[in-house]
Length: 425
Ligand code: ADP
Ligand code: MG
Image (cartoon, rainbow, N blue to C red):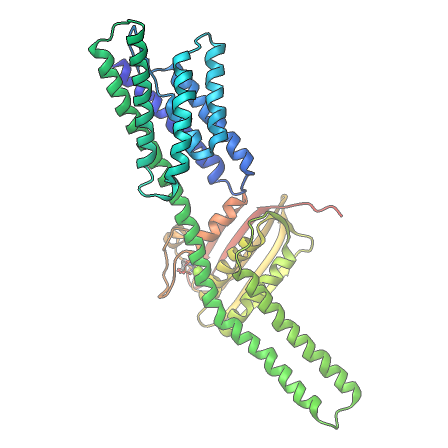
């Protein structure tokens, strides 16, 4: 019974670092420097390893089997050779300091396990193979078996007694190592897969929005082109006075600049960008948003009114913030099939920047509001149901909040609250 208790406790302690790493590093909105990632893995693996050594699973008067190989292997496989070496070194130092030098274990580790693991990693290319979980489990099995064989040889050479319990424990140790490594790698791979799926969903959603905006952007660019063409035709006539020519040329340039800025903003939104955090000026953010969304609005007879306090700054990813606001404003426009007004307001309140997006469209019931942000929830014929999910996530990652108030057939108001950044000039 004691052995099972210890085994379960060991499994728990081996699982916790994986979840912690996932929460602290992978789920964290701001990517850390790879050096910090490595350091955290080393720290977690070392702590787990020390725990495994001090809580062995199978104990008898003559021999002890614990799970210390697993954190060492995890450090090698998931953080590289240096991390693996450091974790091994920490283990050896810990045992030396605590007065249990474990020379047999050190010899096994240094002469057999580390070289074998490195060789395995360099020739197997295991990360690119499927099923990925098979290779680490196999490695754990081989490592446990090697340690058992060395212990066996040691017992024989020193004329110590070897009973059947020794073999049973050895066999159990190999099975437990393989099984636990299999469970842990499954968990790691599943968590990684989830993150990859979420990234893919974000990308798909963005592509869907981009393709929907493309038609209206193209339409919007046609207008300045037509105006510019008209002026050029007028300019071509001989009787136009010099002063009029100047005015017309300025107008042509202005129209072409406008078209250019719409194209630029569309392209920069379409292009994937580095996820760097920066201080964002809300007024320039709104300018870019307007370039993207106003063609879509004018095509649907929606007027956009903008009212922003000056000097509002937030900290975030520009591209993602635009993506979030495009999703919400686009929904607002789509909620007004007969046209209407979309109001964008921005102000400061209690050290936070508040952005309000207000439409007078179809509105939502309480149940519908509760569903917002759930993947694939859509009431539209061709909706993806991903826009709100992505927007909620972007705002949450910036320590912000979104609240929604809505009344059926009256309209909806999305209120985004983000920490304000004070810019000192
Ligand atoms: P999609 O726009 O593809 O349907 P979203 O995630 O962007 O997906 O929106 C999910 C659903 O939320 C919409 O289908 C719609 O029913 C509802 N919704 C979102 N914004 C509004 C709004 N401003 N007014 C009314 N309903 C809205
Ligand atoms: Mg949408």
